[in-house]
Image 1 (cartoon, one colour):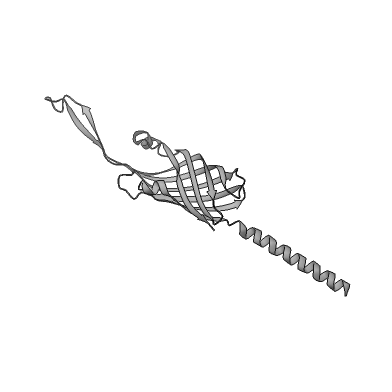
Image 2 (cartoon, helix red, strand yellow):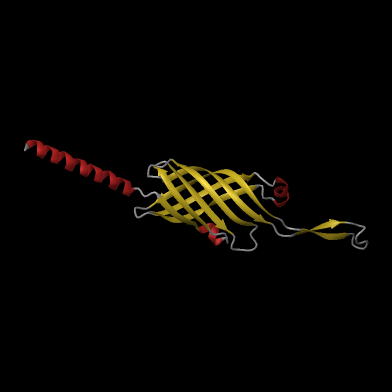
Amino acid sequence: MKKIIILLVIAVNGFSFAQETTSTENANPKNELKINAISTLAGFPEFTYERIINEESAVGLSMGFAADKEIETKFKLTPYYRFYFGKKYAAGFYVEGFGMLNSISTQDYQYYVYNPTYDPVYGSNYVTQKGEKYTDFALGFGIGSKWITKKGVIFEINAGFGRNLLNADKNDFYDHVFVGRGGLSIGYRF
């Protein structure tokens, strides 16, 4: 009878330990959805999904597109890796490395050129440089900070800087050599 009671106590104790482990895992959700409020107000909505790997690191993917015709960067797809330094689970100060696939469509550019043979009275004319469309890929680094409430609401501020690696001949004229990443994001962890 004593052996049965001891086995029953061990089984109940093991079951309660297993339940404790499961509740600890559920206390730290691993998925986040966010929207960048600043870029959205500027006419370039950006949405982010982040998957938390452990208490110090996460991977994510941001996607943004131009809602305004005047914006030359039409699309951005940005995968990233973050390393967190905060005391809370995947929150606080972080550094990130990112890649950015971006689609650029430049507008026609008109500039003034002095040419005495074209117009002898005024000695000048206007030249139109036709816009181009191309896709580029950038690598960069960023920093930021994330705060999270007990209910899972997220507030995040970040900034990053990278360099496009392709189409260098097109980037020099149109000033798209460098890319920026940043904003104020609001989201939810689940």
